Image (cartoon, rainbow, N blue to C red):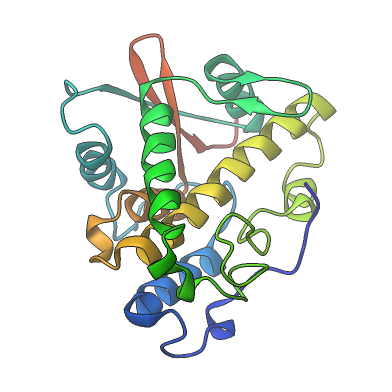
Length: 222
């Protein structure tokens, strides 16, 4: 996946996407503030554990509470955890676990709503490459190979490629945040992907289920 010019909140005209416009601009402002794998910030205003709890209650409302394991370390740890949790093929990734499957199901419902004829009027550039086609997005929102290489010059090729898959997951979740708002135009705090996006911007990366624990990674120098 190659880098392209990212979309910014300033690229969106007021009212361009109907009553979802303001929320979409807020999401894009989040992507603009995204710092990849920052050191832990003890002065965070948002509590990632509270955000995660609210997110999981929306995504897995009938599930038993999950055991959450916070893991911190350098990027090779994130790469190793990611590979253990997901099945990575040569040109694709197959996310596994109840959490990612639930997110995929939510995204499928969102895309189905946006395919309805009455919703196609809000499908237009710059978020989408073509008017009326919700399945063709304009590009990346936050992920960048240049940022990854600059952030991790010492990673070997395998780990760097794995971290790139992780960054693409994050970018996709930012996109799903926007698509969900376009589909439902509800309050942002009802958007399960927005809660996830906030967790990312706090410097925490939910990875999914490993054995019987829900793993969240954050960067820390060894």
